[in-house]
Structures are given as structure tokens and as C-alpha cells.
Amino acid sequence: MLSPHEFATLMLVKDATEQLEVDRADLHALLERQLVRLEKLASGQALPRLTHEGRSFLKAAGRNQ
Image (cartoon, rainbow, N blue to C red; front, side, top):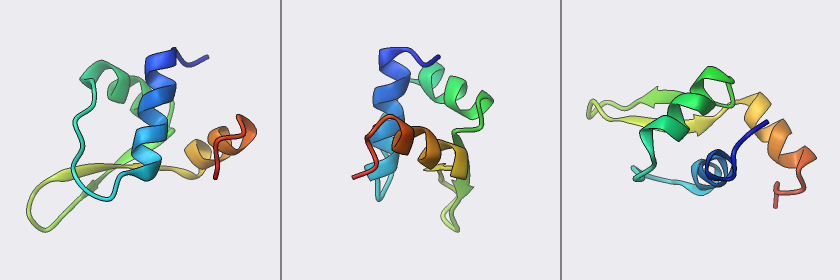
């Protein structure tokens, strides 16, 4: 079960097109649950991106719009 903060972070990651500020603990929890992954950019930055499981989770929660 995700906390409300983790769920909100997952929704932010879904809509993010560039670097975003999120709580590290929430992001770590989503990484552990394999709902997000980090995508390394050529610039060296790592952006969180939804995994298939993350997209499925949001779809099941009715937040896939």
C-alpha cells in the first residue's frame, strides 16, 4: 500500500517532462516497489519515469488520464 505522499509522487512522475523536486523517501519507496525507474540523461541527470507496473497501478486507481 502506498502512502498518500507516495501516491502523489507517482502522479507527479507520470506528468513530469523534466527534472522535478520530490521527496527522496517517497521516490525511494516507489523505486523499491518498481513503480518508477531512473532514466539517465546525456547531461548526467537522472529523471524518474513510470514503469509498466507504475502505469498499471495508476490505471487501476483510475488515475491514468
